[in-house]
Amino acid sequence: MATSYYNLLDKLKEKLEENISINTVREGSVFDAANDKTTIYPLSIVDIESSRLVGNVFRYTVELICMDILDVSNLPALDKFVGNDNKQDIHNTQHAAINSVLIWLGNREAAELGYALVGEPEAIKFTSRFDNNDTAGWRCTFEIDVLIDYCS
Image (cartoon, rainbow, N blue to C red; front, side):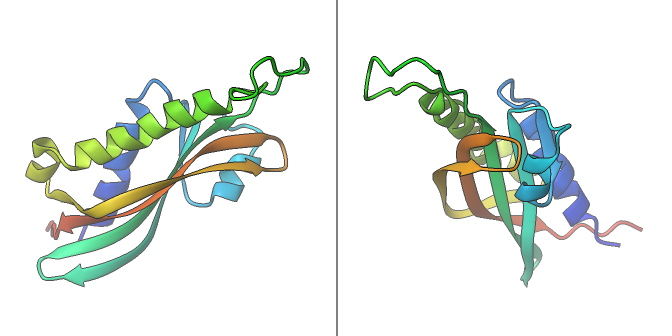
């Protein structure tokens, strides 16, 4: 039985949980996770969207979302560039969280485990309204080649 799907999910979860800027790691839908009242932010969501067989590897398309709750002050903004919320702080910390995963995927340890980042991932920042909160963060879709791993 091939185990690369499980192994990839587990490894991405592990790498995100190592990051001090992340409190909760979930798999699946951003809407389910963001609207769950038990979610402790900052939140990362991993969603493996598709898989292709390419030679001796599975090429997975992964969406990674890292986000936090916007904290808007009731006081007027003293600095129009910074504003009266923590959006810049969120974008900075959550961008770093995504980059830590991408950098790991490009290093020797990941290669020795059979993982290879494909192409040049693009992260897109966002601000969104969900049922419970206003959030900000980054969404990044990328491809990972995983050596086919069959266990007996």
